[in-house]
Amino acid sequence: MKLAVFGANEIGLTVSAVFASHGYDVVCTDEDRDQITALNSGELPTHEEGLPELIMEAKSVGKLSYSVNRLTAASESDYLLFTEAIPVDENNKPDFSAFYRFIRQIAITVKTHKTFIIKSAVPPGTASEIEAILLEQGLNDRSFDVVSNPDFIRKGSAVKDFLFPSRVILGTSSLRACRIMETFYAPLSNALSYMDHSSAELMRYAYHTYQSMKVSCLTMIAGVAENYGADVEAIQSALPSEPRSHDHSLHPGSCFLGFEKSVEAASFRSMIKESSSANKMFDALEGIDQYQPELLIQKLKDFLGTLQGTTIAIFASATLKGVPALPTSNVVIKRLEEEGATVRTFDPITEGFQFRENNSSHMYETVQDCDALLLMTEILSLQHVNWGKVVEGLKLPLLVDGHNLFTLDEMRKIANSFDLIYCSIGRPNIYKGLGSISVQSVQ
Image 1 (cartoon, rainbow, N blue to C red):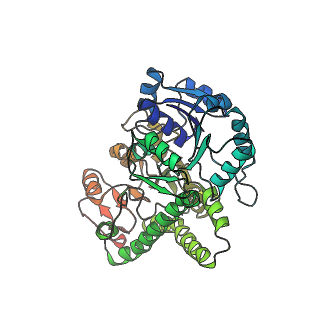
Image 2 (cartoon, rainbow, N blue to C red; image 1 turned 30 degrees about the vertical axis):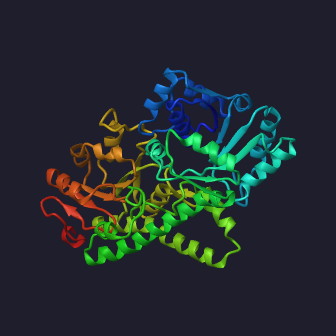
Image 3 (cartoon, helix red, strand yellow; image 1 turned 90 degrees about the horizontal axis):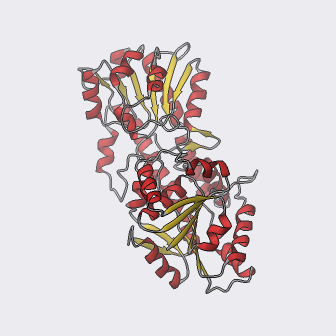
C-alpha cells in the first residue's frame, strides 16, 4: 500500500517511519525545501527515542522517501495522511485557506480511490468541509473517503505512543472507510474506536482539556500535601486510573493547560465562547495553571531567601507545553529576571542530549557557579546526568524539580551520594543523610 504523509513534523515523521517499517511504501512531503533536503541528508529536526533507527531501517529497504512534490505524492498514493499544523488568524481562529486550496489541487489528480486521513488538529466540521470540496470539484463519492484520526502522541515518546496506542480514534460515516481503516491500522492495533466526524475532531481538544483538569486537580492537592507533609504521588497512585493515567506527563506542575501548542488552546477557547459554563471551567484551569510559575519562584525563594543577585540554571525544553503566548520556561525566566536573578538555560532537545552521557559539556557549563538548578523538562534522558558534575558546579546544591521527574527513592540515593537538596511539587524535600526535611531546617 502507498501512503503519502503531508507534514515533515514530529507527527508526520513518526507516522512515516512506523508505517514504512511495517512494509508500506511511504513518501513524507513538506513545502519546506530546506527541511526535505536536511532529511534526505540524514538530519532530523526532532529528537524522538527510536525514530532514527526506524527511519534508517525503512530507508535501507527503500520503503521511505522524502519529497517536496506534494501533488505527485498525492496522485501516486492510496492513503493521504495530513499532519500539518493549521495556522490561526489574528482572532485565533483556524485559517484553512491554504489547506483547502491544496485539497482542491489534489482533487484534480484523483484517478483511483483515495482515503484522506486528517491527523492535523482541526475544529469540528473540517472533515465535512473537505468532503464538500471534493464533491464540488467533480469527484464521485465512491472515489474517496475522509477520516478524522486525531493523534495523542507526546513529544519524546512519539514512537512508543504510536506503536502501542491504547485506542485509535476514527471519525467517519462510511462503512467502507471503516473497513479501509481496519486494514490500514492492522499492523499496529485493532483497538479502533469509531464515531462521527465532529466527535472525533473534538476528541483532541477534549483529551487535552480533560488531562488539564486532572493535572490541575493534582496541582491543587499538591499544595495541600506540602502544607501537611504528605506525598501527592502516594495519593495519586491510589486514585481511580485509566489507560495512560500513570504516564510521566500526568503529574502536578506538568500540564499548563494540557495543550502542547498555545494556538490549540486559543482555538478551543474560540469554539466554546458561547458556553458560559465551559468558559468558567477554562478560566479556572487557566488560573490554576498560570499559578505554576509563581509556585516555582516561591520554592526557590524559600531556600535562597531572595532571588536578587542570584544566578539560576534552568534545564527546559522550550518546545514543550506552553501557556497562551509563551512557553512555560519563558514565563518562569521572565519572573526570575523580574526578581533580580540572572538565568542560564540548557535545552536537552536543541542540544541533542541523548539517552547516555555524551558530549553535553554545555549542560555542566550551564550550572557552573549557579545558586540553584531548576528542572522544567520531561525529557527522561536527564536521569543520566552526572550529578557529581552538577553538584560540583552549583554554589548551593539545590535542585528544584518542576515536573517531578524523579521518584523520591531515586533522589534519596542521589542525595546520599552527593551533597544535594531536592525539592519537588507536593512531596517532602530530600537532603543528604536526612531522608526528608522541611524548608525551615535548611534556612
